Image 1 (cartoon, rainbow, N blue to C red):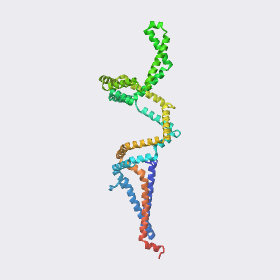
Image 2: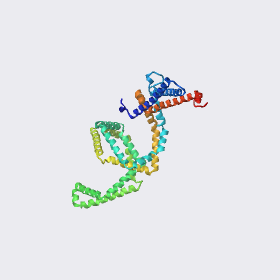
Image 3: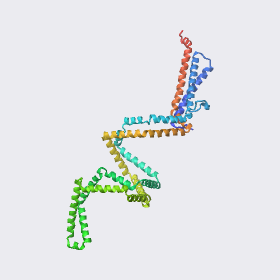
Image 4: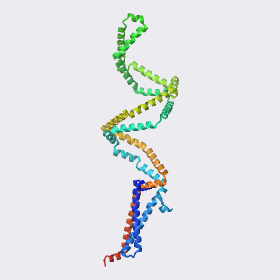
Length: 432
């Protein structure tokens, strides 16, 4: 592999190795040179320093190399430490990440320290970010639509719908829905809304004209002779007004009186219907027929297919538009969320509290999953590739350890030589 083919990290590691090796060769050359020439006190000192530096460099070279591979390829015990302990490294790394980074207390402390709700609000309110959010959403949706196949989606939707419908007891499900809707008199509020709408409708001139016309048509159809003798248009107008006033009066009475008899009758009818849905075999049979029809009818299947194709087509047309409705709506939603969070401290606190609760509930499972993934991934790595990866990331610093070992060894050699030859040195420098 040429230098140009190496990554910057590999080139940096190679440079550090050459520096450490160059220093080792230098002190070795000094040691050899001082060993073959006639020596005196000072040359002996230089030789001692070079010798100690060489020993320190060789010792650190052996230690560094032994981490990654067998020095000189020799089967020396306790070498190639990383490759031999690959599984243990993966297991310990996974446990470290799980227990020190993804543990519940650390994640909760992270949330409390950084206030995610406040940061989210500020990001959403920053100029351009909501547009970016909308744009990225359209990209994700477009990618998802391009990934899925129509036939696969249709089959999945139909299968899921049939499976879901197959689990539903139609009559009992409808009874449960109605029971929920009528709990604590909720249906009476619905009745009030319906009555109010009906009163409003009866006051409408178009409605009264339609009722009058209906009365006239009824007279002409069922009583043609009488209709010719009577002012049918006048009767229609008067009848429409009379009927409207009567109904308005009745519905106003029902609306104003919570104890009105019609309300009680409405309650009784609803409860009777709910009970029939729950216990009447005839209704149960009808519910089963409906469920079977929904599961097997070709028209329903065709409707599901058409529904998906229409939805997909509409989404694709919108996503292709530079002024995408989806992007604008997502942007508006993001802006609304940002403004809501920024303006309501209680809402931000609630958001953070819920996030903490979510973390406390899910973090153990998520951290265990991630830890297992790390352990399995490290175990599957090729030992040589893993060793190279670790060496590239930390090897440069280890080469400086070799350089430091050379320097420290030389200093130790200097100290030992000075101590062992203190008298000679003292006399040599004129100390008497």
